[in-house]
Amino acid sequence: TVIQWFPGHMAKAKREVQEKLKLIDVAFELLDARVPMSSRNPMIDEILGQKPRLILLNKADMADEAVTEQWIRYFHDQGRLALPIDAQSGTGVRQIAAAAKEMVKDKFDKMRAKGIKNPRPVRALIVGIPNVGKSTLINRLAGRHIAKTGDKPGVTKAQQWIKVGKEMELLDTPGILWPKFEDEDVGYRLAVTGAIKDEILNLQDVAVYALRFLSDHYPERLMERYGLDSIPDDMVALFDAIGRRRGCLTAGGGIDYDKVADIVLYDIRTEKLGRLSFETPALWT
Ligand code: G4P
Image (cartoon, rainbow, N blue to C red; front, side, top):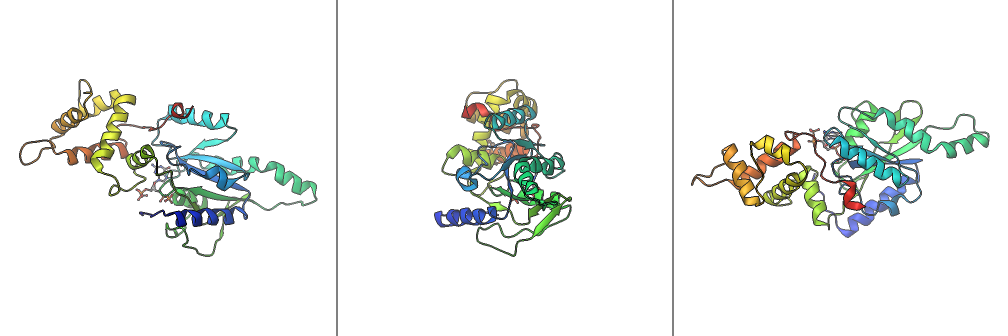
């Protein structure tokens, strides 16, 4: 779904999330493990305030494991727990309820101290930008298919609690927040990973961005995938080399750059170049 985020929509989305926060004990901040910063809402600290928060690095199945480890340490150093998960297959998802329970232990211990013998289940909310995997995770935690509300802030339906085991309940509608799209790198990283639809940015520009990044960080994978002996510094030369290898030719015999861009992005998104991360904590420290 393509969502238009206008200032009014953002303010409304923020209000809606803050309304939901009143109902819950812990927020699950869902990020894309391949681009944790770019898939993060820029106002998240302000929006969530002091609410206990568990960071979930989703799509970890597609991310570079070593880099995901770096991110977990990065968040840990900031005093936050982050868990790598794959909502699609369910890997890591079973750890979520236990971690959430641990996070609200003090609050629930206080309830018990006040004489409440059987405190209610821990209540949780998933928040994240579009396409980060919120619905997939809700369905995974619910163990069944929950209809997705329109991806528009302001589209409301009666909220319901989904039981996750005996000790956790999840709001069935996630909090949808916007990315930091005024940052050009953020836009490209979200486009490369497929979180932003291909109509929004120029496909060749996105592919150039991806190929530059791969040349710097994963040169061997690039050479192996496209049968290159070396990686040309010049991006046009790199497009030419990949295009020749893959037979992306125009009617006139030139290189079809759109086709090359398509192939490169398709290969990245379907893991033909292996597991890739497009951001490392080093960029923020
Ligand atoms: P949203 O509610 O936050 O907008 O995201 P949604 O769950 O719709 O997920 C967006 C896309 O990401 C979906 O793919 C979904 O399958 C995929 N996805 C979610 N979690 C994971 C994960 O942990 N690993 C991987 N590899 N993919 C994940 P889609 O192409 O839009 O749809 P489809 O492939 O499910 O048909």
